[in-house]
Image (cartoon, rainbow, N blue to C red; front, side, top):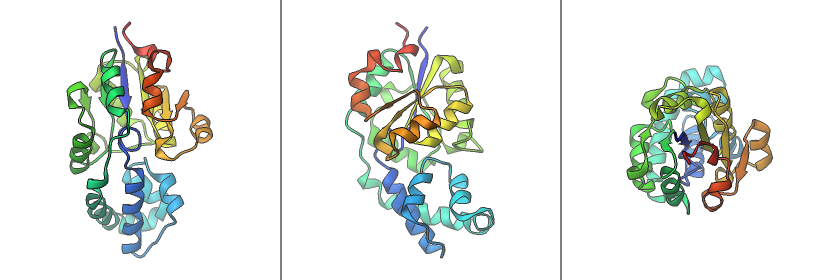
Length: 222
């Protein structure tokens, strides 16, 4: 029986990581707590509460976290027209869907998820999708990956996660799911490998071109 491939969306299938960086930089400036862009970038991929505590500290995040999230949401919505699907992402999803169950494992809000789905234009080959409403704690906690496994209807040993950040790798590992990484999120190969990624590809195009010999092939029902 085929297994499942669980795909992160932001930075993996859709080019949004730096849009998030821009939005968070403006949000932190607006609440009077500017943060260096490099630090924001390193935190992209975490859930908003985890990101805020990491960048602002627990006390400031408790006091100003809701305001910061509102500021981020407003600025991020303005960047929706800049969203673009990575070249090869659609082809990769279609090819995987012919061989295994495809689940989009994201903690995006409903509005963000709607924009991502429109940009990705792949609902026809996706079996299930998660969102922020499905979990109380996002990456690097394993909750999102565990929900995605439930939606796919497979155990952890019959799934592979595809992501672009250290937080993706850590979350998948805590759920017992091996993680394949791509470099399109702006995180280095060495950092992803050190976090536990079993393979790293340049982008979705490279992964698609070598699909049958890739680290995803172990879950294909063939």
